[in-house]
Length: 342
Image (cartoon, rainbow, N blue to C red; front, side, top):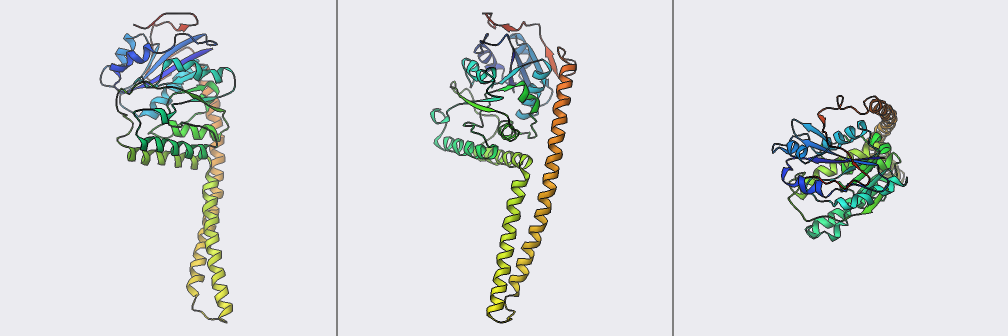
């Protein structure tokens, strides 16, 4: 059983040592542990520092591509490197390495495909009351969209089984956290929550400038992800609403026409109702097209999963076919090995 801990980084030279020192060197049920750094275009020598600290693999982007791209690059590299479980954590030492064994336990036990660390945000001292409230509402909204019981959907501290890693496809350039939860819930992956603690805050978030900025961008990610996996529900509701308004307006016209014995003063109701019914028909056609596109997307994703699996098998043990991946000479951490990074 091979565990890969991936750490997306953007100018994290100063915090990287503390983050790596906190990682577990052995976990019951895991034969070997390796660390992968994804350097998302850092300009402070993060890659060089990571190699000095003895990480096992580094993926380097020459230019910043964003957190979502860094996450997926780590997943892709982890699959090619033969990882059975991939843990994602932050480079700013927000999450405790001591919680990683609990995070991977549901996967090792065969109960879950995706495990998300629940930060219990109501207990985080540096979160403002507004942020805590938005975290609760946001996670509740994501639970509805994903048909899952995820309690802390924005948490980046998560463990992914190889089966789940093969099926994850992130389309957003902003963040992977919300989209992967919605996707995992809608494709039937088993999701589990594990309570985790957090360390003291070391810096402000680099993902967004303010809470309104996060809401704007995250809202778009959630809506697009839900529409991608549940398009019929979106268009069908619009169709029913438009048809109901159109039929109600027609009924009003007919009632007034009968009561007033042919009076034509309500002809506007007939015109408006006809417009809504026409829009309902157009929406119904869009619903059918959306379902056909969704079916085609599901088939394409299944093909991509098979291609990704074959590609990983063909490139197992090599780094030549993974863009920007460098493997160092550092030996893997194995069960019972008490070695520590410098």
